[in-house]
Length: 125
Image 1 (spheres, one colour):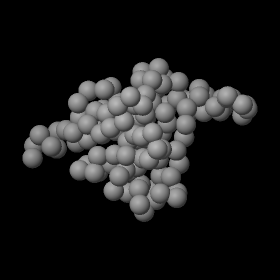
Image 2 (cartoon, one colour):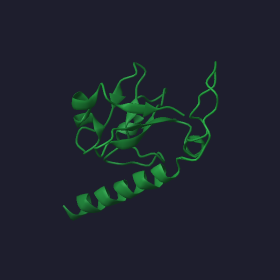
Image 3 (cartoon, helix red, strand yellow):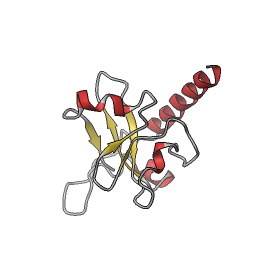
Image 4 (cartoon, helix red, strand yellow):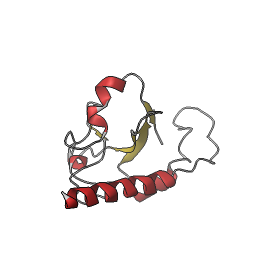
């Protein structure tokens, strides 16, 4: 039980560190073909892990996480953290069918998704 508590605190800290890497002062690029207006905001996260594809959050909830995509290993982030190290919690991820996945045993988005599936804010880099 103590280990689980310590793991929870470590994971929360890691997500907070990742969130702090979002450049909220970055100027959005003009929208256009092959241009993502949010690219500058998320550049540091994308540089740290090329599997990073966006950030999902819902105001008024604790849902505020990076979203990953590993095309060659679709469930990789079920049991790995943003830095690709083993984690019992994992990180929200998309599979090849654009289905949001998460570890159902943790307090991550999977159990919240049905309630908020039409209200999510997925910000792509």
